[in-house]
Image (cartoon, rainbow, N blue to C red):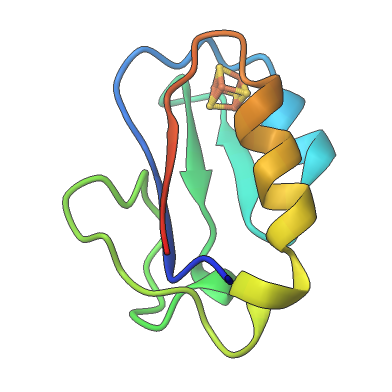
Length: 85
Ligand code: SF4
């Protein structure tokens, strides 16, 4: 089943692994020192960790990028990428 939303909890080390695995959803804000879920991937059009908002993924991203989102979560060295189905 596709993911409905994705967010990033506290503790990011800004390692860039998630942005490399799935740039359609993640990027790293090196000024803030955390990965974020990009505006283009979200129905609310914001760019943030999405931890507070838990905004839904836009369009078919949750299914089209399901594998790469899972890869990003599995590859996060601190295990802070969370998804909802
Ligand atoms: S993989 Fe994890 S630690 Fe690395 S930038 Fe992404 S959220 Fe942060």
